[in-house]
Image 1 (tube, rainbow, N blue to C red):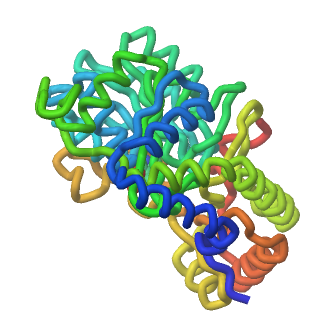
Image 2: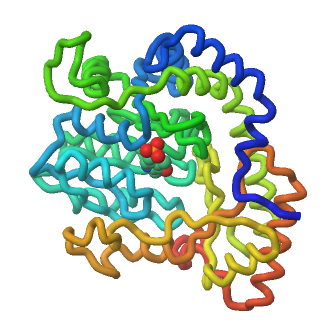
Length: 383
Ligand SMILES: *Cc1c(COP(=O)(O)O)cnc(C)c1O
């Protein structure tokens, strides 16, 4: 039995007809860039997230970049994020000419440690970008409080958190703006590149619509030099069709996570934490192990595909050498990068597959004897 890390074909097979109808509809309309399907998706996704506005763009990276640009972030400015995230979060800051400033993460949730945030703020700080990594939201209440106290915009990187909630609010609805990716492998994925920004700020939404389209409020009028980062018509249509399935898919992920949690706990592994008041949407199901690479190889040989998100924290990437960081600067991010192991997780994953993953994991880790990490470095013992 081979268990893939993810299975998009399974997802698309159950809705093949719906997707083909979208293709026909867009083909007939010739609205290949923006157009009625994108406008309808923007309305529907804003309702889903619970914001007034949604602006469709062509990637999650573009969503972050344009939001920073529209808020006036540029050369000489700083924006704060975490080193334990996908490159795009920091890259969007760099793309504006601003400097990424890193704050370490909380070991239990893998999201920004709000207790370290204030010390990273300087007179140049123009934005704070918490990342709702793996599908669980960062400590938005505290981060928003700090942002407000200093007059700094908080932008949510919600690229892994479609439908996640914290204290009754959805990811993407709490900050000044929420940035989403619809890369095919995300919880809501297009059939190509796509992204969106959600916000309650009408003026920001208006600016974003110009930023994504050559600084243009209407054809051949350009108020400033922007970009071409529009969402494709087909992707808008595909996303509308898939949005109707998102809640069911999320519940399937959560059911698989509950199964993993139980089996792992029985086997002496600590499952990923879901904090009280949080709805984790398990974009990734991540555990911590020592000797990860050896264990991954053993799992692979036994037919279980795994992933690593992410093997190198951003402050240690060559791309950010110029920031002058070194090993030891963000110890929690570094430890998580060394120990994080993402287990197979996708809507429709069979209960037997989850059983089998945990059985193989146990078998291999016992064989290797040394690879079970005590979770959270003991930091949260007893809490
Ligand atoms: C996927 C992702 C992005 C970038 O999205 P793209 O659509 O691939 O550009 C940004 N941040 C995080 C946390 C992501 O997971």
